[in-house]
Length: 398
Image (cartoon, rainbow, N blue to C red; front, side, top):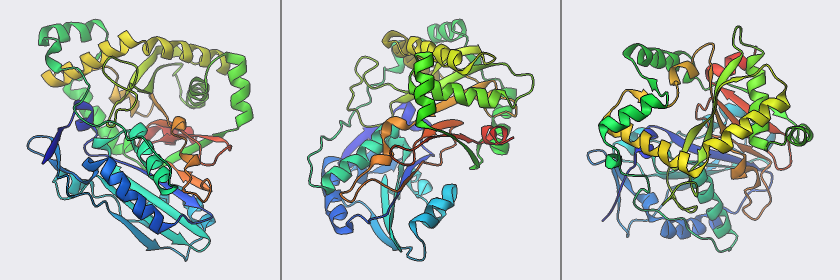
């Protein structure tokens, strides 16, 4: 029996499902996919594991590698029909059994290939506690490579590379988080956060803003910033124009920590993404180009290896000691007039280019996690969507 201890980042994602769906005009070969999944199961044996609540571990037997992959009949629907469903596409298949995963009765992975009248749609759903976006999409891409008979290099999975929480004392951790301006989570702020999530943040409602490749290219040239900063600036300006009395924001960008801190390799499989503060109280009254340049500069500073390592050490230690501090204000993020914006760029996963040997998908659907703002490209070469969710969706739609 093998066992893996979940990290602090894993536990934070314990109740979440990470998923993806892809509609194809030419259906992939189910039998080839099924045979290739056996290769994936051998390369990633922990996918057949079960969560053990008492020890917060995942346990698996090397001899138990079957992964659930079924076929469904949705031939009453066309590819155009499922694309038109948008956020409701997930109603076409049973949801991942996240409750079963938490009580140890369900595995990490599940997939369904459903036949359409003129193609097929693939659904893959997994426990977020074992993987972030980089791991999830990398896993599905490995499966596609195996289906096409191509070699793939499995990612490493083992002990968490996060620093030990005891590396900083409780007293020193408290001093540092106060010095760095972390937010104290008072009982009132906790209640406000819970109410905000219940009323706004947990909503699956989204609002999409499309940005053409031409517009993105122009703004990158004029600002000197990258795609992430340019799209972030567009998103911030869109919300700022719809909020009264709000002209500055704290901007958080989700960053992949692989290769950014000592001991965390590029090929690590698991949860290794965390938001970083790209700027506090950034004034959004300037032009989009200037705002993009400020966000780019703030992100580069926040992602310096020494800063990333220090912030992760503090996060792990503060969580270990149960200190009532956090590095951003989640209660403010889910309010009706947010000054904290949480942005997740998912363009690097290239989900719109997932090919099983029958070509790119006609449409790639994003997960339905309630990221405040995320960037997504549903078709290869097409426009990018800025997707606002929860409280931000209601504001963006005004």
